[in-house]
Amino acid sequence: MTAEKPQTPTITEYADFLEATRASYDAIAPAYTEAFSDWPAESNPLDRSVVAAFAELARDHAPAPTADLGSGPGTITAHLHALGLPVFGVDLSPRMVALARRAHPELRFHVGSMTSLDLPDETLGGILALYSIIHVPDDHLPTTFAEFHRVLRPGAPLLLGFQSGDTEDRLHLTERFGQEIALDYHWRTPETVTGALTKAGLRLQARVLREPQDEEKRPRAFVLARKAA
Image (cartoon, rainbow, N blue to C red; front, top):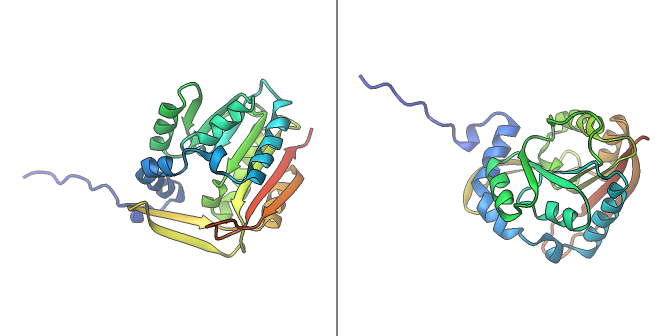
């Protein structure tokens, strides 16, 4: 009698949001990389200026590195490197990390989760997380921001970018780029995010809310904070 082989769960059967997010981005990694391979050239000028301001603040803490959390294909990690930052990328998706390493062999990319960073205390000169906290549920946000506070050096900056919306709003996608996925998107206002950052011990420096452009459906929010010196 032949033993039955254990079946791999489909993406929609993953119960944990980290597992579902990882599997979803593994599935769409090649198409996502092709679609978002040239962020500096295709991004909004205001977005680039906010990132440039963050880079200038983070350079004050070099040689302590900056972490690009949710680095995806590594495009923005490479942009930060071009701005003079010692930087590395962290992404939940192993396939995304593999593609980023292939495209940017001069940079470091690691598989990991922003909810539990494999880093010593107070070692980072900056944290950038663009459009990645949108996949973190509300009840995991305090723990995530506490991790940011733990790994940042005193005085080091943090820049978050996210689509803005009412806190109770959530989008669930089961398909993207023709692939089966199970991704939850959590929309939040700048006030909600800054409140959670403040509770984690981070000090607000600036908030920017940009209106939707072209095919964008929601405003883009940027929140700049620092760990107290």
